[in-house]
Length: 568
Image 1: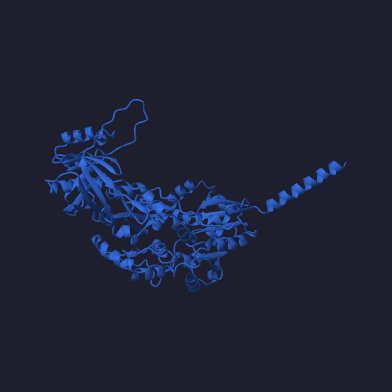
Image 2: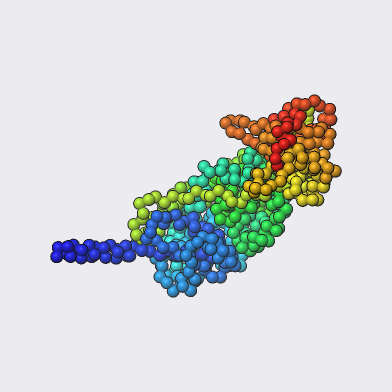
């Protein structure tokens, strides 16, 4: 009998625990209208990490012109989605949104509005109140003259002041928490070198162009600028990237965007994805060229030099943090002025302008957790909420297969600048990778090179030796003066019509505890130019080759047997 009473007592206790656990279960609904809004909310979700009491659902708010990409972005997250009709018919413990537009008041539960970007800097014509951004506009913040949101989470006190001016009832429910996206950026600065390594940046300066969406964006006003910068900046001194607003992907489509940008992409332009990758690029960047999109304020908060490229218009709201930034930073007119403008930008500390857009750095998730769990009527988890480091970029740029090369020879020193083949810059010769560059450029090139590939894993294989391939190339390409097999980052075999077979050794630049290497294909062009300018010489000889910020020592000697027989 005692055993039966004990078992019954244990069952009652277990049932009580289950009821208590059930009473603590909560459902959080993410209501999104665009891919950009979804991305903002994903940066907030770490406040719930480790909490099995929270179930997250996502719904697409109808009525946006950018809902197609929002659907695709939702699928990539793997989140549980519900239809808008189902969302409207259910009861939610919390509703999170990053845009106040749409029929959000019909959703049940306390509603929280997060900022859509870095402050409220732009107005969009044709919707809401003139000259007001949607995040401050009573047209979107009130329903039946009452605020429909339980909380407006803002990034800076200045935003609260403006909200109180334009919509006092909403401001009464607002608080400053900081910016979760900024905190991810700041928390990822220690990964800068790994981001640059994935991008293949090396010692080059990474220049990031940022374009918002709409008729006043950089890409709409100056669509030629990315290709101009890639075409005029030496490849071994600069790397160029283009960060686009998610709405630009939605409006144009990735297929057409890559088609429009194809010449610049093939010349090495980096095009990161609209979620997370753009932020990794800002961390990796050396400078940012921007229109009036708020991405530039994140760059300024990181201390990156900022260069303006906004052509003006009606969208930028005077007096905002973005307007102040653009009025103070140097402006890029022609692409060829970048060197001069960059020096001016580097002399200006851009972080002072970000201070007007972001408060409480590093505190956003902790403050948001406190506010959101208050609305959920739950005690927050004991484990602190921490921003997730940004992942390494997956947008590995195309490696150019052909260059127009300018080589200036002064004794045994050669300064090399490489550009895309269709550049308008003054150049010395065309160099191309065989066979990747294509038949037309291979036939026109004075220098052809091939990189050694890993050995085939198949039991039957056939491959060229370095000596055999270089001889074959000179036989088949009468316009080629120099053929080179790139064996390793520090070894090449060069066959010159005038100088014969040479082994080339490239000494890596070692400075301040770092090892810096340059592209061996550039060294081949330097050797080619030096041989043309120096018809009479006696091996061995030591050359110094300058590639942008990197100088390497190169040793020329008669070809070694091991290089001739190296399998490509």
